[in-house]
Length: 633
Image (cartoon, rainbow, N blue to C red; front, side, top):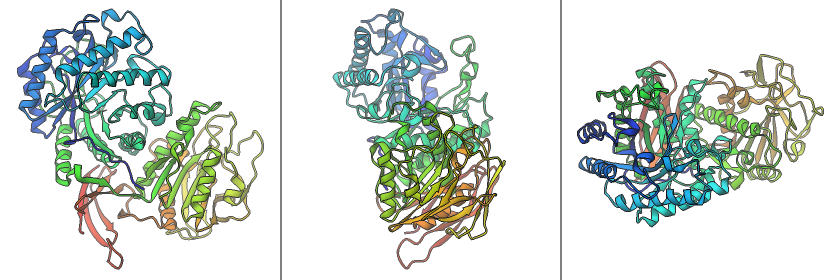
């Protein structure tokens, strides 16, 4: 299966969101050309080539038909400062939200930003005028319509938001600008988060040139945190657009400098392997603006910078420099992600808006998928994502459907067809985290999996053990008969439950601690259907500090059963391996460690051709380290 790795023209954007330390959002009032140039010099010295900049709307448009010419002149100088350094910037038009506060032009007077015709016209006029002034300037790399509009303008019906976005993009083009354009909404729509805010990632991708996730998640598991942005990029990338990680970062008030560097390193490399092809950290500098909103009431926002107030680089900026050097070394523009034999199936309930389903149905899907993505990484299975809404991809050997309460009827039948054609389809059961229509929404579960379920209406079958043990009664790949895997039980009163089944045409592969069938395999055509009676991924997803956890061994065994081709593997589940392929045939294995200690591991490199011998490469990794290994041809 091909994994999205679309790119914007020219050099990959590697940079920061930019506010000068002279004023933050109010920098244009106190614009200091010397200080701005000093700030850009530090960034350029560390290999950064792009900033994202902001037209603070109340200042730039003080009246509904007037642009402040003094500030416009400051912005023109800002562009020249970029050109002098061979850098570029991405202007952002409607900046009413920033760092924990919303600001309106005085003349808005509460008008709806999406539905009030006059208000939409004024926004479009501003975008068109600014695009006309600065479009074509060598320092303009692209355009963003807003900054986190779901926070500023609020939620609205999808058709309303999409129409507004389409008009705004047309305004940029009407101004003569030809550079790439996107919305700046954060890609927080239902297709990515499971929560509907009206900003459909699918619909907006159709009218823009790239998708730009903003990721600042609070987590309870370090490995999930390190892969969080990558997974969001994977979901956002299912619509074929370039994915620019438009905002990510961390305040020094929330994380020590060394751990911030680890976080930046993990986000950068994991999101690269997750399909991102542009990166903009938040943000360039700390501020000494303690009396100025929003920093007066959100003081942690003072310290998101990659430099201190005096311009001293923080360790995270060095991580950006090292990452940029890697992009240059591998020639990112000429690279693609290696094709994969493993896919995660994204149930259409996440994004389709079916009637009489609950929000928890969607957020449960997100949690299980994200945990499965992390688990697959631990097994060196760089899984692609295939959306049921768009038709399940036909070109994989292993299909993972983790902790699934529901797919559509056609979706289940499609998976059975794929198994008949030679694939291995793995499904783990989950009753869902709430009590409304609790249980499996499967079209033909008994026939599909070769079982007879023994559910009782309206009742859950609770997991009463604190640890679920699966003991294999038959070998499955490298898991020998007699092997026991132990999983921490977790979930709500509804989801902490198992599926009681009896085998009919399926064989029992593993039993639980009470001797009940827990993992069953039905051979079907040229392939197999594997049913797990326990919601392994859901249990892990709601358990703090759980990764790596033993589901990776099951995925590894399923990969062996399916004949999945893995170019590089590492036995230690704390180290993941993935491969980038350059147009000239060069291949780069990227190894990422989740260990807080130095590791020495052996990378097993699969033979490049039939009859050739596999290779072994010894690799040393620093704590939470990354190593890029060029594979011999």
